[in-house]
Length: 298
Image (cartoon, rainbow, N blue to C red; front, side):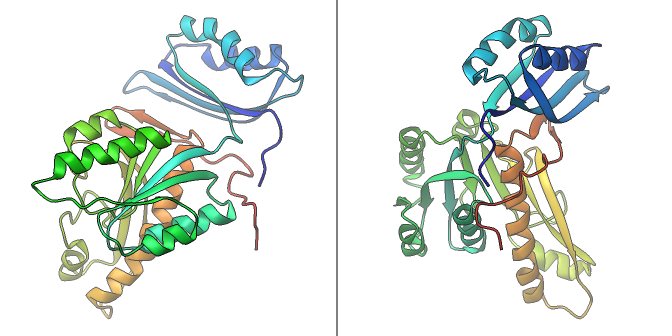
């Protein structure tokens, strides 16, 4: 669904102090803007304040002018802030290995506009999904990764990210560990899907571990990638019920559906500016009304 003209969003984090919410609302009103959705959270543990507000510029003031006018207020409260056009699609690079369920799901959501992103490239260490990707008119890059060429392969990946202007990297079941350097350079801009409800059942075969423990719920976790494997701040999680009658293969099949949904929801939250890093955790605000609507409904 196409956003209304002059529909912007502001995301703010700053030290917790009285009056921030009121001042932001006053600023927007004074500059001819109408707030359409707002969420805020004051974390008493960390002493940080978080806010996301969606608003319409009723008097035609543009984004650049609003950004410039907001600077004094941002400086007053020592804010880390971003103001952006909600209709602008973020440039995303998808990375995949040999499990294609998340890739195919994301390509479909992208195609119908359910995920308002611009997929600028797909990177894989295998050739299985070249035809699928090329048929979507998306550049496909196969970069083989071995112990011997890992540094060179990652340098090539980073070159692609730079040249495409990628704002987000999505590991759609990409089964290679990224280097500490790449995690540092792309901090807060790489999202992974883990086929387990973290922090339980880590490792190569979590569904087998879950089966052997006789769990009644299996799940998936989407998180930001850090140098600590599978320890990044969690964005989204979900579960599905299983019973004693199901097999490990059933667990895998059920788990794939959860993985695809959880990853898509995490990307949706990130690209709409609803996710804030808060130490080793995240603050994730609810979606604004209408943000799940797609260009091709039904």
